[in-house]
Length: 478
Figure 1 (cartoon, rainbow, N blue to C red):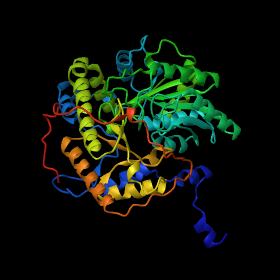
Figure 2 (cartoon, one colour):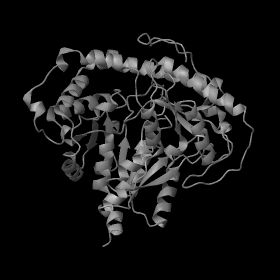
Figure 3 (tube, helix red, strand yellow):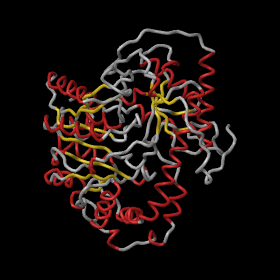
Figure 4 (cartoon, rainbow, N blue to C red):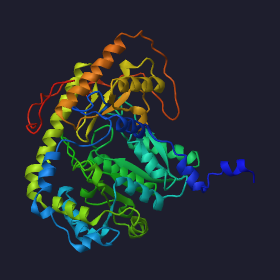
């Protein structure tokens, strides 16, 4: 072997080469740019304002106050020692009681069916590893949170099978981007024809990035569909308590019966609903004993510190604080922050999909594209970044129509106003550019449509938001 050959050998296994060669997604790239130049009102006012990363920053004052209570200041030796990799039993018991109550489970949930891992990313990674062989596929309605791709690929080698959703409302639909069983059947059939073994259906409820909530009847139809095809159902409900609209949220845990309990798996975490992305604690609930055995073998690599489990137990146990302080105030602040952002977008002529849950809105920027292509979408994304504003392009969510963007609203009033101002600056610059409308094209796995979504399902006005922000000081827009 020559020196050149040695230099070319990375020393990795085939698996290592695959993992090392996995490219970062647009969400990761955008976050990296923000980390390199973050906005700070005092020290870096011209830095990048982050409205692309889904974090709830509205209730830190409430969390900080609760963390200062005496029951949080507790440290016993057993919290610093090795514990059950599945999660400390008392913590799992508290999670089971909490979810039984707040997810409205018809029967008491079994804490032995719960596995605690360091974030929902770890839940996706471990589930994909134990459910699937490399090359297997999972059905997922698109657009969807693009981070799932790497979480299911790096360990398990799974590939997504898109169920494309579009903004155009057809005669069989009642709203834009509507999921139907017919679309699931079509995608499943297409995968079979391509020789892909489909192993699972992944659903996100409340949805990311659309912000809508699956009706109970549709959930039941999806479960029946999965049962017919012997598919596992992975139900991601990480935004289950971040619901601010009037729509009723139905947790998979609340259903009286499941067509296939052993193939139905629930996941939730503390990062979104409790504004604790940095805590890194995710929850898997599955009745399948063999899956629990397999995931628990991997849980040793994804454990959560004992002191963290204790602190979170105290949060869940304090029902008076949850019911009278945190949950009502969080809901109120989410709704008001969303209304402020939607108001600003509406004034700029940017339609927004109606939403009831999550920390973001799905906005239609298609009128600002130079052509209805994903190249034009990326060009617009860079122009917005030039204004030092990070939002997320639809391509990052595998959207099949260019021109849709996700904007996170769960931030302070002053930053929301600054976001609106920077968007206005971008629009004014766009208006000064020569207009050039190109033809639609198909790029990569995404297709696109020139049809405008029905105005009946787009927010055109919202209530004024003025209350619930006494903890924030409104500052001048930079």
